[in-house]
Length: 362
Ligand code: HEM
Image (cartoon, rainbow, N blue to C red; front, top):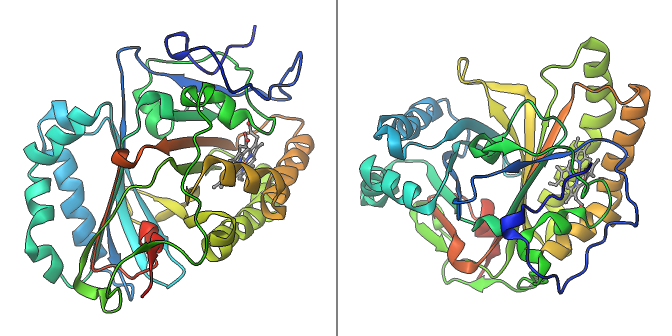
């Protein structure tokens, strides 16, 4: 018996119909996280440093952020965190802690009790000689969904789950992402359309170098974190992944990063998860992190843009070759946020960093 992705306590009368085909049986299993019913919201934060040009001084910055995570009282520490990195399109090296809290109040207590907030707000950060950034997402649980191909290795927010679902119905057809979002039962979740020519005007973006910039939240901003983990693959599958899937994934991610604006994607990067022992990218776990003006724009790209068609089609061939017995693990998280559920702040970062892309160059 297939489970419904939306848990019972978040179900309400639909005014927006589902896209699930009649008598639908998914071609492969998919699972979602079941959070405690009393959980009302969650927080995902990416807090990091930018080095442009790259420098190995990043190790001390990531140590500082990591210490804020671990030195706070246990009750307010993140439920889960790991280190991630990416060299972006400008060639700048970005390294960050990706962390999750089970409520906005836990996150706010952490900010104060770890003394992170005081440290972050100090004018000294503007004189540190490199960039800092924080991208904080605080969705109510009905504005978040996560799905994964494997029910044994929780990723990201799923580390806060009470249980994992049984095999669920709403996946592997176009529109299933929307069907899994509780808030989309009676809301089209329309965002603010972004066009290449418009954005939030900010004077004097030139000379951004030492500035602290807060990017205002946008109505129904849609964020995807879509991950790939091939660390448990055996040599034959690993070879197949690296030769057939990884190249098309990079093409898709580069399209969104470099030309995404025309289809509603403000910013995108393919991040590596960093090995906590070596402090180097492990190169066996990656995730695309994309910011879209509207859930619809993300749907359109995934369903109809050649780059995701190649990824999706490549995956079906890949799975067939392996008779559907895969060690590759895939997951994604979707956030559709109210304006006040976002906090984006950048200090001394180049002007194409993350949501700084939303700002209109003057
Ligand atoms: C959906 C494959 C990477 C965006 C899917 C589905 C598959 C797939 C099989 C249908 C999944 C389901 O509902 O069960 C892959 C593979 C990837 C990959 C093999 C990497 C190796 C990405 C990335 C993004 C992305 C990096 C965006 C940053 C989407 C979206 C959907 C989707 C938005 C949902 C569409 C909908 O339900 O309407 N992908 N994908 N994918 N993928 Fe990918």
